Image (tube, rainbow, N blue to C red; front, side, top):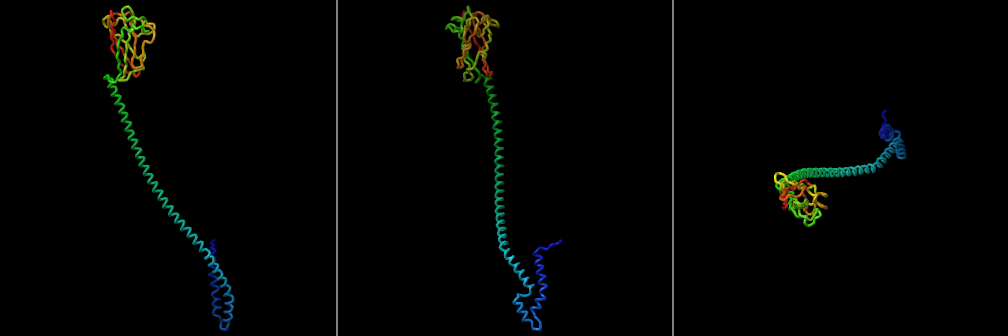
Length: 286
């Protein structure tokens, strides 16, 4: 069911009352021929018109008072709305500024990312170049070693009379001759390029006898490095390391010496696997 609002009902009531009061007001306003006009005018001035008119006037006054009371509130609401609109507009401008800043930041991040990618590519190129350079250096080193440059080198000096000084590596203070097996000393200098090799032991040296005074393709007797208990060899260290690249190796025959010249190969191998071979001639007097 339709229910009118209070204002609609009030407006309808006012219209109804106005319509109902109009005939009466018309009669009272014009009077009659019997001379009652003066009485009615007096009554109207004293009572403010008919009761219905007075009620209507009171209602209109109340409405006007209510409207007058609502006017400041409406003005305040309008001011608040205007302030809100202003704030919204300001907030919108700030949001636009923030969005613009975000766009600028994204552009900068894209630039930074592109720079990082470029740097990564350059780093990969540098790494590849270094790998190639390392391989080239390795190839050059192999070539130099094959040509005897900056490679392991050894030089040998033979001392056939080393026992004469009474070295402890000898069984007696007698030089090597046909009556004994006293050892001879090989004084060896080992270098890697211009750098002395100082960390070698007995296992880094190998001796191979090629020829001996007996002639032919084999030596008689055979030459070996001294070890403790060998005939002709004394005591002590038979591979002496000077600490500056020099080594003293003591070797003797497995039988008495035969006068003449012995030819042997001395192979030196360092701890990195590089090696060199030197030809050694040992001459025993008659």
